[in-house]
Amino acid sequence: MSTPTLQLSLGPVLFYWTRERYANFYREAADWPVEIVTLGETVCSRRRDMKLDDWLGIGRELTQAGKQVVLASQTLIESEADLRDLRKLCDNGDFIVEANDQSALQRLSCAGLPFIAGAALNLYNPATLGVMKRTGMQRWQAPVEMSKKDLAQLIADCHQAGVSQPCEVFAYGHLPLAWSSRCFTARRHQTPKDRCKFVCQKYPEGLVLRSQESRDVFTLNGIQTLSSACQDLRYELPDMAAMGVSVARLSPRAEGMAEIVKAFDQARQNRLPPPDPLSVVDAEICDGYWYGRPGMDNTRTVAS
Image (cartoon, rainbow, N blue to C red; front, side):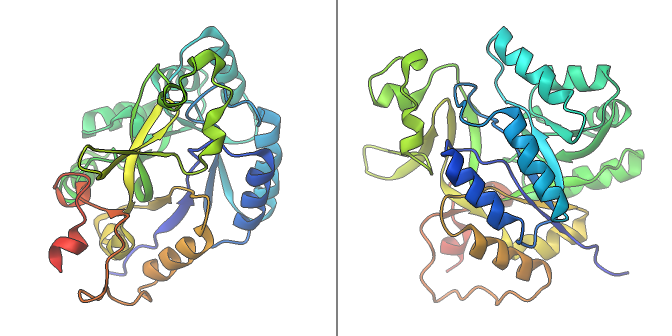
C-alpha cells in the first residue's frame, strides 16, 4: 500500500504586518509548492489595515494561481463589532471558513455552511469529531499540544468509529498557546489596549519574553502568547502521512519563508537529507509536544 500524499498549507499570518508586506508575501506565496493558503486576521480586531475585501482580493488571486483558499476567523471574540465582522466573514460567499471559536462554529453550522475546525477548538475525541462532521466540518486541526502517539490513536479511533475527516497538523512556526483580553505588547509600551498606537507592527515576528535566567520563553504578539522557538516537524512528514495526517501547516514568518516551504516540500517527497547529530542545532527549534515532552524541548538537541 502506497503512502498517502501529504498536502502543505500556509497558515494565516499571526503577526501584524503592513499592507505592503502582506501583498508582497502572498505575491511570492502564489509560486510556492503549497496547496492550501489560509488568510485573515485571527488575533486582534484592532489590526484594521486589511479589510475583508482586501483578503477576498488576495484570495481570488491565489485561487487563480491554483491554491485552495481558506478564510480564518478571529480566535477571541470580544465585542458586538467583532461579531458583525464575523458574520460578514462567514457569509463571504467565495471561500470556506476556518472556525477558530464557538461563535464562528455556531454561525457556520446554523447556516449549513462547510467549515474547517481550527486548532483552538480543542478537538480531542471521536465523539466530538463526529458531531463536527455532521454539522459540516470538512477538515480539522489537531491541538498544538497533542503528541504524535495520541494523534495516531485518535485518527485510528476515528477510522474505527466511521467519522474520519482530513486532519491538519501544525508542523512549522511559533506555536499559538493562549489568548487574553489584555494586550501584552501594549502593556510593554505602557499604553492602554484601546490606545495601543498599533505597536504590534513594530514586531513583525513578535516580542520575545525572557525568563530571569535570560532564557527565551514566549513570544508576545498583542493579546496572543506564542512559543519562543518555532516547532519544526519537517523530518516527521513521512510518519505523519503514514498515520493518516492529510495536511501539514506552516505558519508564516517575516523572513526566509520560501526556503522553509521548499524544505518541507522536499521532506514530504523523502528528498530531505537526514539530520546530522554532529551538526549545530538551530536554537530556535522546539518539538517537545510532538514527542510527549515539555513543549519547549528540542529533541534534536537531546538526541545529539
